[in-house]
Length: 129
Image 1 (cartoon, one colour):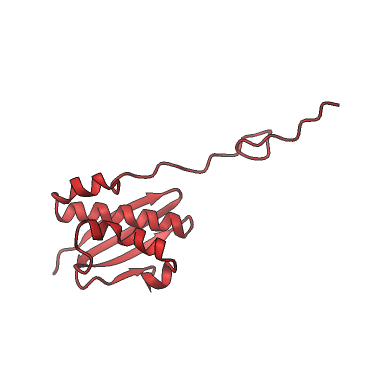
Image 2 (cartoon, rainbow, N blue to C red):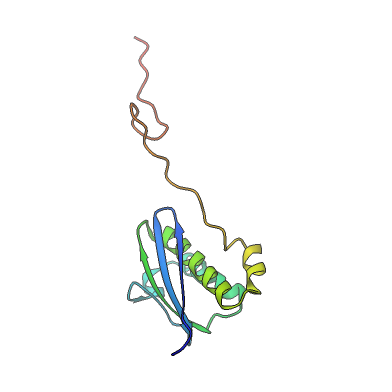
């Protein structure tokens, strides 16, 4: 059996669980090829960025299960999961991935709506009279 690496990445409310195994560079997201799932080049590049930094673009096959959030959040979650899995495969990659900021979980979340106002920070219209 070939070695398989499993890792998780999160961004906003998106969660990505990946299985990385040695292969030809095939990436599948929720059962679809990743070019079909992420239609814009910017999102595709975000997913491939950790692999490019590690110089292992066509070395691993990835099977990704992404849920929650939108496509941008899911792309960010997958990026973190791939970076974490790559550090498992080769600990020397950690420094280069960390320098590119790929091992940092993006902590920005949607602020909760507060009671007595229409949104997180918006107030109801003030009426002087």
